[in-house]
Image 1 (spheres, rainbow, N blue to C red):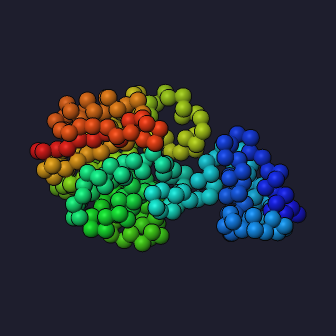
Image 2: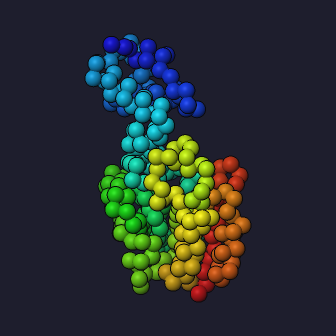
Image 3: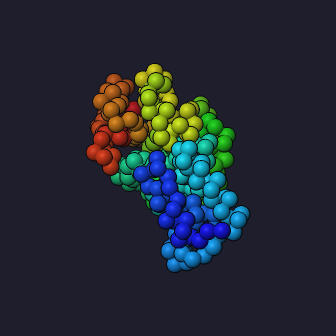
Length: 276
């Protein structure tokens, strides 16, 4: 058997930029303890079963499997969400979409739609900040909806609804003050699809046609039917797609079209207002 201290000193994950943190997180998961426990009790011995479980997780991490999938959880906004390979892993850049939405729709009674909700991260984050909002998340994948519903239960944000819909297909007759989406926006031949975490994430949530813009085109073309007067559409996109997305919005007739930068200073969210 090995102690916590020995394992932290010897475990190696050569392909990870956060090797020690990864090992700490996986070890804490196996032990059912916090990371602070690891440093408080470095002489604690692992049982044979615990060591076997840890080694199995470390090997999966060495193969490149995302730490969030191994832990089954990921932090987003102020929430701790359950994740699985059925959905994208919520990312810090997407929090910018939440920030912009909160800035642009200050009404305490806004009706909000989250298209392609996945884990429910965006919908739940918005609802956590604006309890008076009516928030609906939709997704085509049953596994994603089940995960979003589980996250709704765990966060206690019962006012958020989730429905199965292929974009707007199940939403006829409904109108919203704000529509937000983090749709797939990667080109089908993008070499990054064979690298890093995205190798393990569902292609249906990543890839959208030859230039990555098929889903965004569909959302922009369809959204006006579902927007209330003066409603906003906000879309997350690739860092090189800002000019194109703004042009699509302007061509459709949106006003106040603009982009907002992500944590790296790249255009990451674009949107516009619909006056009908």
